[in-house]
Length: 366
Image 1 (cartoon, rainbow, N blue to C red):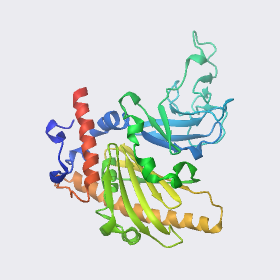
Image 2 (image 1 turned 90 degrees about the vertical axis):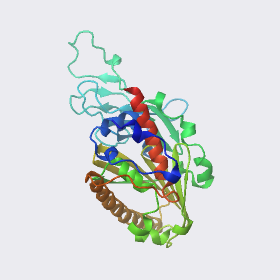
Image 3 (image 1 turned 30 degrees about the vertical axis):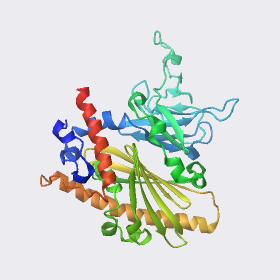
Image 4 (image 1 turned 180 degrees about the horizontal axis):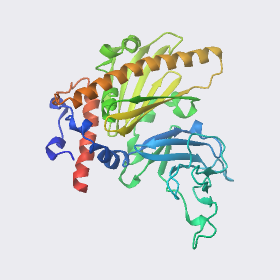
């Protein structure tokens, strides 16, 4: 458990980074799950992946398996999108093992218990002789769901999660009507297993300070001198003018949003890339990138999509390499918290202050 001395608020001008134990103490895994992830809004999917009844997407919410499902169509339009625990109520088998389309029901592959698209158990093989067992009494636990800009967010503990309108306040206006994220399609996913604590990866994402040193290709298309980072209550964003060849993004601007605790939205001309950082241990995380593009079936658009995937892979390999190096440094016993750069690391400070606040609540819960 973090000590109270570690958790006192720090002013940006004199702030230091978090102590190493926040990144290397195995006890932090349960604390992060309880007071950070379960009490936050986590990205699950894009509505483009859930267009028809029975379409479903699986996700890991910091150790809780979930499945987002488009329900049956009603008289008044498309069915609702629900997010359920992806854990059978019989003996904890998976209801869905992978994303899928147009399923009529969700069937646990362990013993065949089958649930409707509303999460209610419909059949349980050979359970007819069990006294007082009624399939209709069994249903999957359901999470709170909000759909914003075509993105499906869910909260495990909605009573302690931020008010959703406050969570995204101001982003719609900054993105602008011409870049509504709900209109993107052409979904493609790339994932990386990274040997670092999830907070190391988020720290790295939240500052452009390292771009000239770690990302030569990215630095060539961004204007570092004009790079701006701003913070809001529950998110921060980084902005830079963009100058790239026509075969990639062309001119415009790059917007990089981070939303508490682990969602990133990387918005470039014609492209939305979402990024989820999923903890899988104290020194392991999985980083999942989902790519969405404006509808365009031309050969030029297909070539730009491939170029984007290649360029993104180059940048991510640079990031995961330095993040793994940082994790080793944190675990070495050598590190003591260093001073943050007030100009370039204000979003890192913002993230750390949110973490300190969450961890203070953990002390109150004890």
